[in-house]
Image (cartoon, rainbow, N blue to C red; front, top):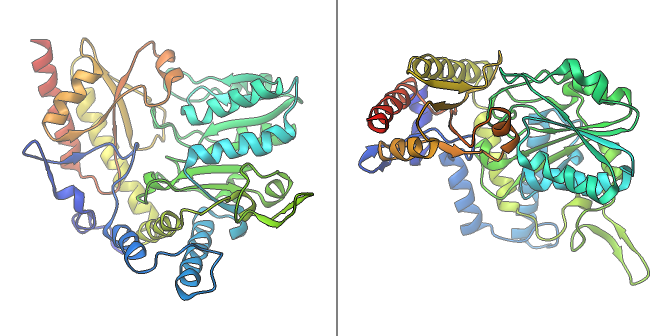
Length: 407
């Protein structure tokens, strides 16, 4: 399909509403993206006409729901370049995916005296699970820092990765700085010492996409709601040989083969990690979101988002006292900023009254705030449905807020 921004916007019903009597300018897609009509209609249809638990029924509704669920797994596997659909585990979100690795793989393969390397720009979901693992197992946490532009210090890898490194946790694209680091040296350094690489792909899968086999990461996590899909659904990709070696994280129905009081055996991957009633509506809805994204040429989407980033950056940097955090080359369409003498919460509240939705605060990335010695930032995060006029509206709104707050 040709990339026609007006036609695309027609597919997102919420973009046509007003907020405080102003047209909605939604610039918070990094927190959660809006949903296209085909995702909304699919979720509605599943509850109205096909609601039935998957995998356990022989009746029509169950069989149809199961078929759609597994088709969604196949589509997502192809979308991220997995070798087979069994490498796709459905979870409650990226946080659940990362915790699954930290518990199921980490408790089995990380021990006292080992170390875990985490980048300084990570979302809390790719920090806290590793801290908890380190506490449980007596391991240490090491930090790969970034420079003032927001680029990871790859030159420090040789002194941070050694024979006791078991895990390297890194983002594909920073949710705060927009940085998209070249992960090849990270993967090479980790694999050279037998460590696994765990990638937070929440922003990366949306902005630029991924081929996990080309990346050669061992685990990859992302959330459906940032990829134009439903909330409460996420994906964990894992290389099959690693998933096979990992014990289950949660126990219950559907993840077992046989159960006796003497011994329980487990279902094959990926079902081994999908205990209980799966969020089949969310998974099928995510499959529809992927189908929606696949309509467009990836290069056209990337060019559109780059144009949005360029326009917003040019307009915002012209504002006196405004600083953008994260200026590394090749960053994705995320702009975090502060204005001297203006609290980010005040900025966000005024923009809200103008109909402009941005995110304010620490963005679940407190170490990034500490790096820049600030307590919070304003963040505008763009998506394929945003327009250049919305980037202009952001800058005009910031200018108006500055005039109001500095007087």
